Amino acid sequence: MTLSKDFSNLANQLIATGQFIDNKGWVPATSGNLSARLSNGTIAITVSGKHKGHLQLDDIMLIDEKGNSLDGKKPSAETLLHTALYKRFPDIRCILHPHSLNATLISKTFKVACVLENYELLKALCGITTHEARIVVPIFPNDQNIPRLAAQIEKHWDQCARGYGYLITGHGLYVWGASVQETLRHLEVLDFLFECELQLHGAKN
Image 1 (cartoon, rainbow, N blue to C red):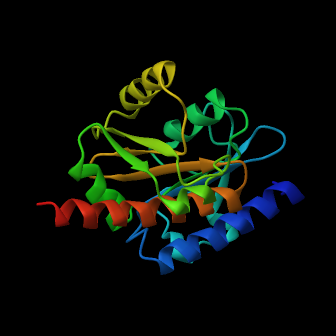
Image 2: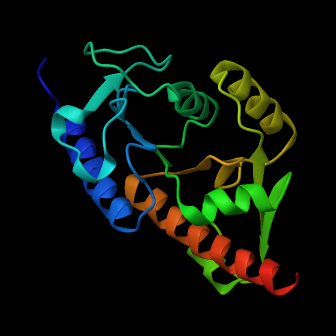
């Protein structure tokens, strides 16, 4: 299969991102998955079971908009959670799914959502220009039945704004943006603010 410049460029960005978030300790063992949408609508995504800190070009595969493999490789079992977001929100170009300690703990600290407000760092999120902002990161119960989980998340979007990410209880964070760089910035913001909330929550109890 001949690789396009678009694929090679995005794959290399995902490889570098995997190394960065692994150095942060956000993708232990073979956890997490990373993806980016190409200009032709196909999706570059990490192959199932690969350590994100040691990705090679061959560890990034291509799928179509329905999650079907285009090169014979096996995508993550959670691929549908990526494709559902790409289908619903055409401006999303990248999705990162780490399993950071802060995100995992936050998902078990709050039941329905984590609300982040009045933080200066919120201005690092796309479209926010003041600390006097409020974002909601919804939390969904973990479910090994991915189509059922995806359907539950889809139902949420029917009633609520998209925001910047969502959490799965005891699992991790899904975060997105208009590019790999923007998505990584959103991830750094959310993880830092999750840590702030954890410390505040601990100080109150």
